[in-house]
Length: 270
Image (tube, rainbow, N blue to C red; front, side):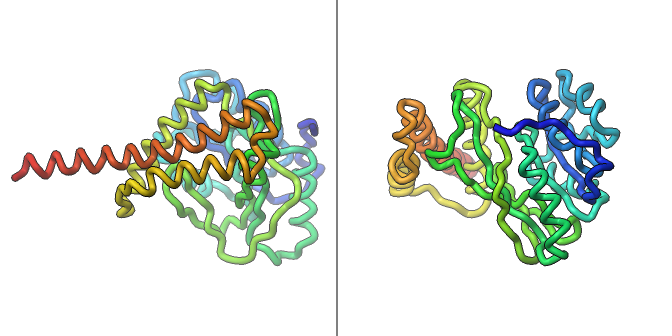
């Protein structure tokens, strides 16, 4: 896989602001920031980390801001608002820009002549001692490079997204995504994210249906394990397919629980 040796910023005349949101990422944030050393500025918005994250970040940027957590969408929107360059590159703290992707971004900004308002980037997950080309996680295109004044934030937590005013082009080279530290970390994140997703779904008017709780997890497993060939990865592929299905099932189970709590509160008021 490609290395991440940073080039000096003055060697690449790209007017790019890199933005990163983080909390307690001392084991991963340095590799992320090193891969952004070519950008004109790096803006880190930290949610008052209690580990060495602030110390590490200040080695790489003087644009280090601490702010109370406001949700994934609002926190990233705030980071976006702090950017001063024409183009913004969004990178999560567990991601790294490869040299090939860096070169492709720089070349695209130089050669496209302003034809595009954004660029979608594929992400390649590193987990369980392997790269996940199969199983449904790749290519997972996401807009990560965009004109600062032509982008807004939409979606709902924890699946926020960038809404770009104008055409978007897909890039070929990927971000490296070190998504989970361990199975324990993975399971904890599933629990946290499904709670957020259930609340957002209810807030948007979603209602629990037994058919959805049964069929959607099964469809997710079938897609991951069979359609996306997760079975080629052996037990690891089975594990990823099962946890993908569990994620969907828990989201609906927690939505059901929220509806039970709502009915209970209404019953008390009568």
